[in-house]
Image 1 (cartoon, helix red, strand yellow):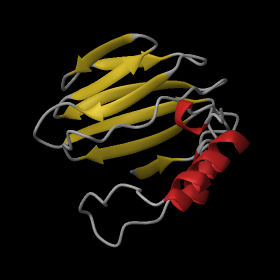
Image 2: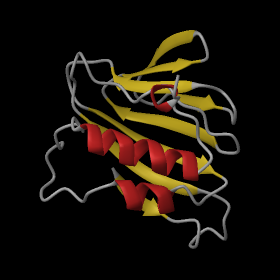
Image 3: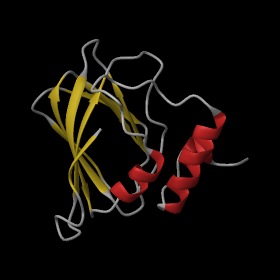
Image 4: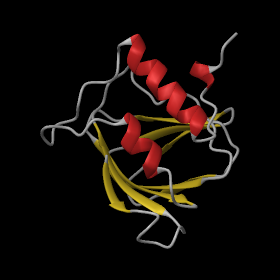
Length: 140
């Protein structure tokens, strides 16, 4: 994930990322909700799988999909080739949380996914602080 424009650069209007991910059959973002942010995904290469609420769909190059604020969602690479997207998030500011939980990749290859329990706990804590509710972080 590469941060292209920050909330500071857009006067708080939006944050813009370039996201590249490789295909892994068992990897998807956890189902989560952004209470105030709307996300716009424009697929550049590959195929993006996305679940919005109870509906799953795929998005091909040149297509745009919108996830309104408050809608539970998750994404994954749905093609065997890498998927690249531009992701615009409005209002801006989510990059603050992403910086706290992210670790810069030492190279341009797709990094290995988080697997340690301590990593998951850190991500859940940060998402709660940002006002998000990931389904995998809800205590029973």
